[in-house]
Amino acid sequence: MAEEAVQKVQKAAGSDQATKKLQEELDQLKKDNQDLKSRLENLEAKSKKSEG
Image (cartoon, rainbow, N blue to C red; front, side, top):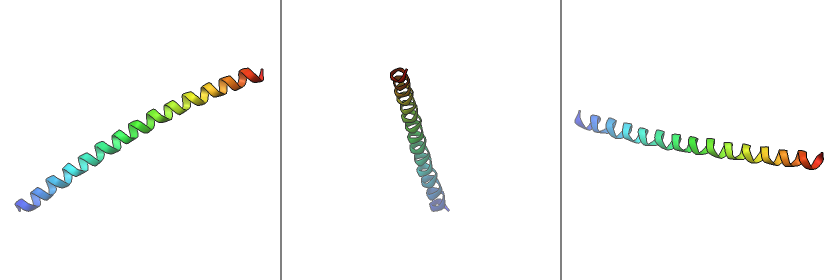
């Protein structure tokens, strides 16, 4: 009984850590995506200026 409880707690703690890591990775991907969008917009603006 006690061993089962310990296993459940350890599993839940591991799950919380995995969820936290996934959230951090998602946040980093969102930031990287926004940075890339900004760079693309800047390049497109420069391209349109040189065409005109």
